Length: 146
Image (cartoon, rainbow, N blue to C red):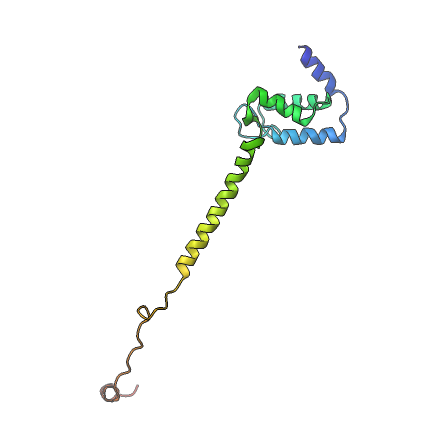
């Protein structure tokens, strides 16, 4: 109860522009712990509402961004952060980049394979032979002129 009263009292003090920016960054960085499907800035659950209030109170109390994130990581684990720090964050960034690189290489190979033309002598069709003059004369005599 004391914590709630302290948090409520701190919310009465006006926030500076930098504090408001810090709150917005944190709200975009932290996931709603009820389902981990959205960040707390847009999620409409009670847990997200409570976290928004706590974040605002902590920023007003002078806690740094890293202290607030560390508090929520200790409480909920690494999944509370949209992009995890450390090795997990690097892997989360590297996987889509690596997938795009492999996809580009495969697409390049596929397009080159499909458009390459082998012009060796065995694949070129021979030119058709022209019919002899006697055959043309016979056809014209039977068919007549059109």
